Length: 222
Image 1 (cartoon, rainbow, N blue to C red):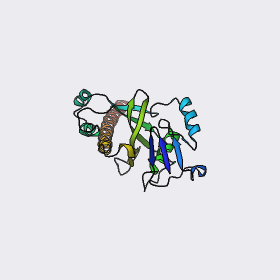
Image 2 (tube, rainbow, N blue to C red; image 1 turned 135 degrees about the vertical axis):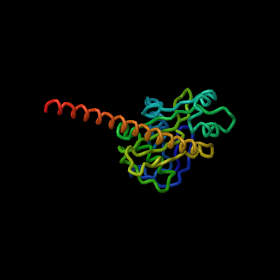
Image 3 (cartoon, rainbow, N blue to C red; image 1 turned 90 degrees about the vertical axis):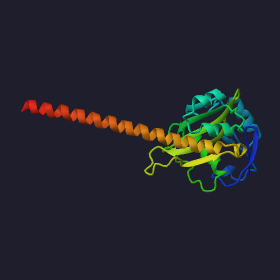
Image 4 (tube, one colour; image 1 turned 120 degrees about the vertical axis):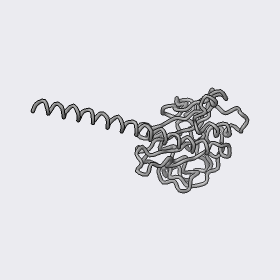
């Protein structure tokens, strides 16, 4: 199967469980913004006129447009990878990262997983996306944000894995984006762990304070 995705025609590598009516098509047309899939060229052309989405349906949590932005984020472990992703010439691409909740944007995340399965052999998650957060990396221009790759992460992981799944689309491979996504995943985990520790510390102090007040109040009543 061949996928037409934005300006790219991509040969797929593996089977993906799209609905049966799409299983035997030679070419699948996928909107690069909302990830809706279609069987006919005319359908995707009509859809492009109507589709209002120009970026992933989530919160933009990372954004860079210039070398200066990267220098100002020297503490970010993904910074060096960002420069490599731009070809190592010191002039990075315009990149954004969006955090998309699988529960709030279920259809988008399901379509993303179906697209990813075309290039991942062992991916098993397709439709049960509510328990995951998806971090979508895009290159953007005046036409919108173009999907480069993504990684997903469980909202509550007993093993505290950094990544549940990771993919860089074939047209963007060998450009450093995979390293960028891995570094960003580690950064998200570090910040999440630090936030949880702060919350636990605040809760513990609050409980101690309330217990102390209750103890003294009980003593006064006696």
